Image (cartoon, rainbow, N blue to C red; front, side, top):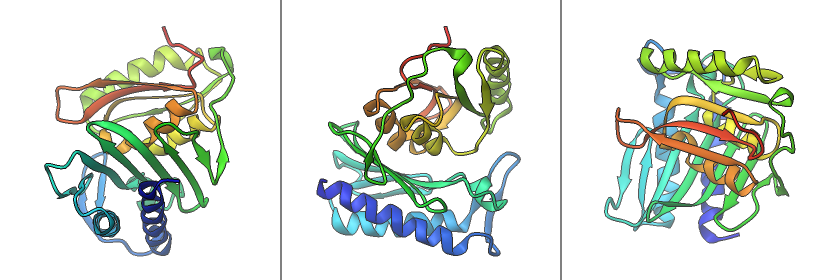
Length: 247
């Protein structure tokens, strides 16, 4: 295990402990949008992660859902989602996680996803096998759409939701089951260990999927990102176990 991965695991577990301690307590809401919620705990979690990562790596940058920190000119950039699945968290649905990735010159070199309620930790380095709680994992062997279970995310704008609905209608009849779970990072983590076979969403941010991309690819799967014109580091995503196609 590299020093950077070790630091990321510590940060993810510390943030997960914070989330677990505050789960189903009275939460401070910073913003309530039509299809999203921003909690003060998101900020607290990212601040905790930032302090751990940048204390150990003071020359690095950090790019997260709650803003930037560190050396903006660095070739090393941590990409952080302090609570992926905030709406689930707010409503007391125990399906959310902490996601931490590290990029070097725009290439993802490690990823960590931690589900504090299940105490499950996925980790991966660029040239290594991904693991779940220390056990090596791989994507499922299912190669027929009719046998697969996929998850789909519906994004925060009417335009992206409309496109997602059309895509969903085209795919739902071809697969065994569909699920809408509410965490992009955990969707990719579940593909990497064979629980799910595919994940599709029309608009996500890099911090939602950075760690999961490397998990899926190193576990034998595929991730296709299509940049969107709506903003920097915004993408449409199609991820599979590497054995199926929606064409």
